[in-house]
Amino acid sequence: MGLAEISRFDHPVLNDYLVDGAYDETFEGPGKPRPHYAPLLEMFSSLPADEIRRRKHSADLSFLNQGITFTVYGREEGTERIFPYDLLPIVF
Image 1 (cartoon, rainbow, N blue to C red):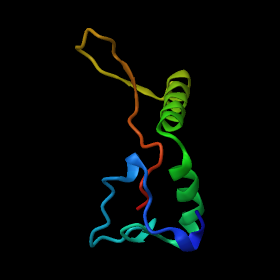
Image 2: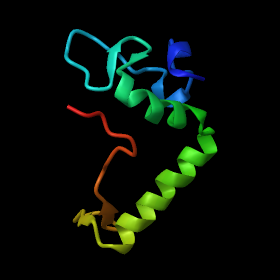
Image 3: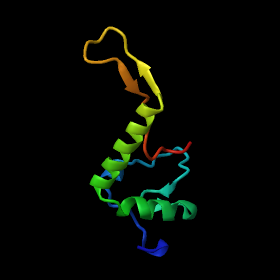
Image 4: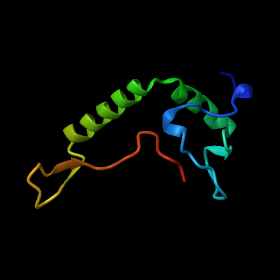
């Protein structure tokens, strides 16, 4: 998919992505990425869902192994949790 052919990204993670009246660093409008983000979105949209899950799991393990965690007191199922994060964050 080339830059001129990009009209929307058909990836489950982006299905509910809403471009409303607020400024969006990545998209100019629905399905219309800003030129400097198009290569990243092309690569991202070409990844199968299993690969994205694998990368998320790998990042989770890295956070856990490096101690990027917090403790939840008063729960029996375990207290150490990794900090929540987005694998592909929205840029403000």
